[in-house]
Length: 113
Image 1 (tube, rainbow, N blue to C red):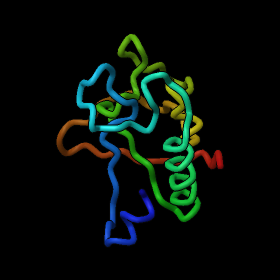
Image 2 (image 1 turned 90 degrees about the horizontal axis):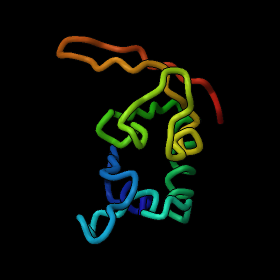
Image 3 (image 1 turned 45 degrees about the vertical axis):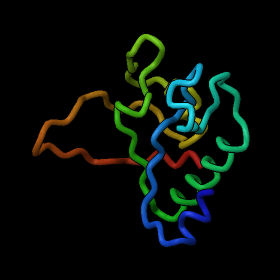
Image 4 (image 1 turned 45 degrees about the horizontal axis):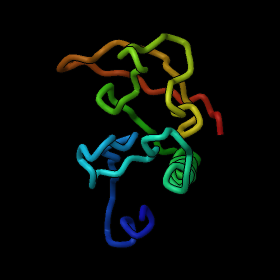
């Protein structure tokens, strides 16, 4: 699916949902991880594409709105991300400050791949 998107002229790609919705809520918005929290074909396909992207100097940016927070709606500084994010992108929580208009942040990689 990812390759065909780029083959048809896509120049950037956004994943709307990390984990699939449960019990029919937005049932046609599939997530990278299914509701049962198992890594399957979708996860491994996205993981492979992200690793290729990062190896070619691409940057992966997650916002707080992409379900990075844990079950209790928290982020813990210095700890690995919940929900397989570390496996997916090779990153962990470095800073947990929200940016306001006009603020910038420097993005550093940790070369996990």
